[in-house]
Image (cartoon, rainbow, N blue to C red; front, side):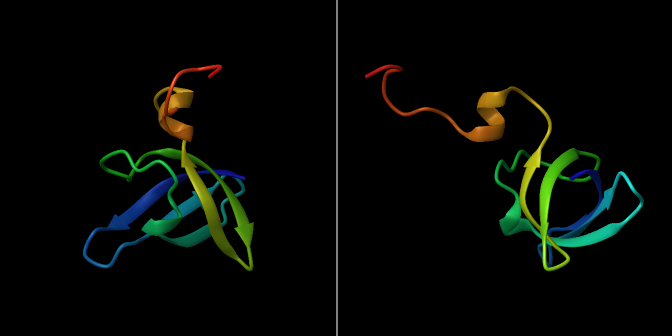
Length: 76
């Protein structure tokens, strides 16, 4: 599912994602797979399980920032 982070509080570690269909979901910062500074305003891709967003990926930067960096040499 796609959406945008509309609210986030560092004090409590929770925020709100508004999905493309207008649905709103409360999320925990620990579900963001590629933290990258300030969260509010980022477009995200996420999975919904039991009405909770899981595996949230910020849709900014390069694919390497979205999925982490490779360790070691490529093809090794």
